[in-house]
Image (cartoon, rainbow, N blue to C red; front, side, top):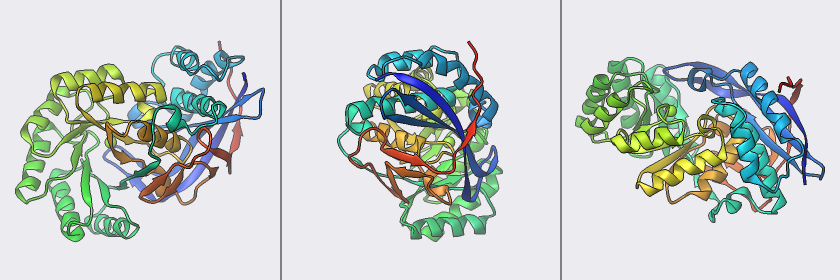
Length: 368
Ligand code: MG
């Protein structure tokens, strides 16, 4: 079976509540969706969010990048995932989300051809995952209310966004911790919003108050590995690198310096499934755990992330795939079931996506 055509679409899904971090505010998912067609019946789907603040990618850059990658795939066999990944990754530098969208779609086709769910093709066995959910930065009362609401929905791990103003951040976490009374573990994500010293001060204040979160994510700017290492040395809570680790080389550098205890893997940072597996495997070799995470994505690309997590459960010990839970509706028919905290991967070929509703066609820019 050979690839015959690549089509692009816009997908818009309003969020249940605005997504606020130290870096940005977003009110709806507006992602580029790709469908990859073949000379058989199979269609592969992928998705890329424009996360300019983190990956540097916009709608325009994703469309342009896929326009450059797509012609390389026409005529290629869907049975050779290594070749397809090479064609995608070799098309240009950077542009991780555009590459991820294409790679997700071709892996979807690759697994469909083998009539197996993607996670099983990748070596996984167990199709059930439990995710946390993000609590956006807001007024303390609102964050407490959102946290209690999440616990009522069945979430047992909350990812609290911090990284604004440290006194307020400390109060936010204390108030949420007090309101939850042990019903959920807390993960804190500062999204690069603190200096190393601020991070240590904030975490010591929390730890002295008896609050040791499950992890502190990316306290300092992405490039500040020295600062990240300092925070990791100084605090009791585990530190996780997110924006500091896009690729395997950066993962190895963080591991070598012991700059973090845990690595965050996102398909949109590393350019797709092959590199995500490489990061997980390198981390496993060094005894470092990973969290599978996502950007603001719907259940197309988050399904792919769930398959990758299910394929590497021995090292991907934490799941932060809350994109679908943040959406007002699910545009996808078929495939992974996102039931708030519970994620279930049914025994159907590939990603299992039958249709995606509400797609608006986008003209492809074709460049060589
Ligand atoms: Mg993060």
